[in-house]
Image (cartoon, rainbow, N blue to C red; front, side, top):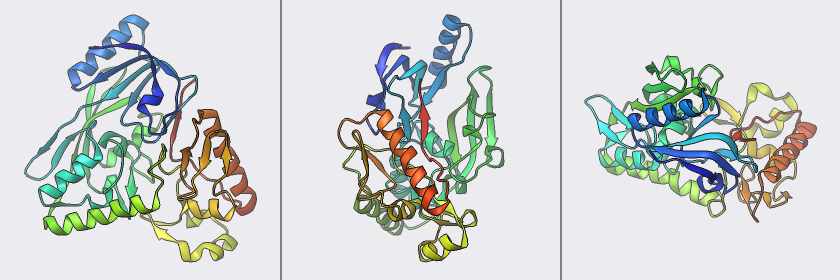
Length: 314
């Protein structure tokens, strides 16, 4: 067990923003995690102020950092069983995508180019191109931060919804995902690789991957949440994600927000639903930009955008 103090969290964030964590550690096994949590409880008398980190792809850390313990989940393994794949929550999605391709397994093509870890994908019910994590998840094995009790939750118990799950709720915030079991279908490796590569190529072409970013800032907007006027304006842009939505980016473009800058943070001109770290941005710059974007969109379209990212810190 290695514990570090005052670790800059921007090193662990894809947008390269964030102050220090009071204490930082990493676990590669369940045993290491339990050892870290027990140590934290002995030192503090409780298990509050604990943040579990995956790959930092959609977390905005405060400029002040995080007053507590940050632990990075690095449980990384893939094991194929007869009718499922068991995978560690710290495994990168990109590695699992390649495993599906290499073993001629279908069902995960939509995740081509998706950043982050498997645990993060489950927590946020990550999805793209009409697919979602919930579509292939059989069960998730987790441990409670406070009681250290291990449980296995079936798909239904994970309470998946659009970019959301039990693990993002108040009831599930103390559960750390250890590993998950995913389903698959046998397929043709060449076809699977082709379909997956199409998604990767799309991301490279459309997304500002050459700048530090947190992926999509706002969730797409369900058509049932907009007025008839908005529906008539954006009707041709409706897509299934997996239900009918209007892409959030359309509202940003329509509000003239492309390229909008506050401090070092900028609404991407390549894909305006991305806020990029253009010039040594601070978290306060990103938060101010998010606030202004939401205000402008609400003013013009009477639509309240909902953040897809997680904001943490002091």
